[in-house]
Image (tube, rainbow, N blue to C red; front, side):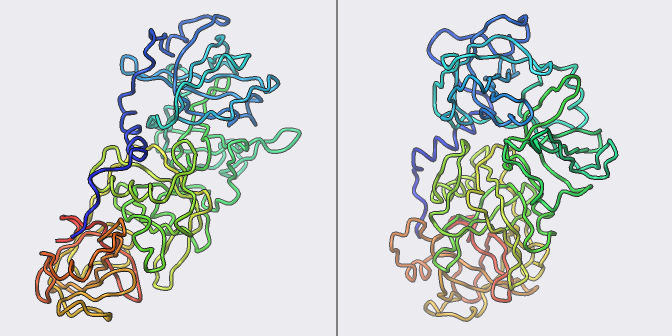
Length: 489
């Protein structure tokens, strides 16, 4: 039986390990260490300081409301607390920070200042900012209750952090009757106010036009909708709000997305499991996406050349995305999380898939774990379980229609092999993709593999499987995720 290689390409390893290292921070340069960013709060306005940090907000992301093209940085944990600061940049200076990416290591020399009472550093020349290293160092957002946002006044060190909120969308507390309120200047809209409440109190978020955010296509933005919003914790005079940095910071749950009408636009995030190329030989390209509770959905992409974005927003390959799914499934911690923007489509079999927008798939940081599988009797799997990672076991039955493989319980079909198992409660189909048996397309002799595998290949023998549940050709079917013990035995 063929298996994944023991080695992972170095590029992919760096990509996933950089996120893992972000739990504890990493070392800076070999030079004498600079003061931590948190020291800025002990200085007086006008004093100068030089600090190192990692970019958390790209230059110009919040320009529509701040009228400047600054960015944010965060350093490694000092005494358990990472320091954060916003760096102000006057657009009239014409400084070119176009090569700066999220996760870059940068050194900033600036003057202590403020932006609407939020403590900042101000730079006035390009030499004040030095990009020291590549991207990939990403911090997990700090989980906060919605009531804690306005309590930032008593904890100023929270300012400029990347935080995460979960809560229900609320109607405008000022009485407009809408959960989305456009804010405009004399030129046009600069962004939108939206409010969340997790039951502890109200928190305001502000979505910037310069962050390429637009609530208009998101029909699910109604009062009561559960949202996750990640963003920059901003101070504006005496009030506080969260600024998402782009659509990748907004997520609707997968179950709520499944309740939307076909054609609806949605934003979701989760852990990949079924690799992007697993179903390619049968004419489908895409991957399964799962929340921590196991709820999932198939994400359809157009081709192997579909552009996926890494943490920095740079292109990466779907092959790398496949390795991410593999690394997630073998217990890499923290797992790599993928955010998807796209449209919901109903399938002819009564299932639903997300068709990803071009450029709508991006790696993001989030403290999720790989979802556990849910075990069911073979006859108890139902439509409500579609998209889940499920486990079941039963005896091989007379196989479904297809080209029989020898005299056993498997048939050869487009893109792989199919069997049927039953534990006495009812039968369910199992699909084993060719690209799961041999992910490197080495030209293996699949017929020999299937006949000789010690996994109960003969009719009447037991078979246990774990995989992604879909509806195919009028029947429920479990698509095996891996060719390893624990996924097919």
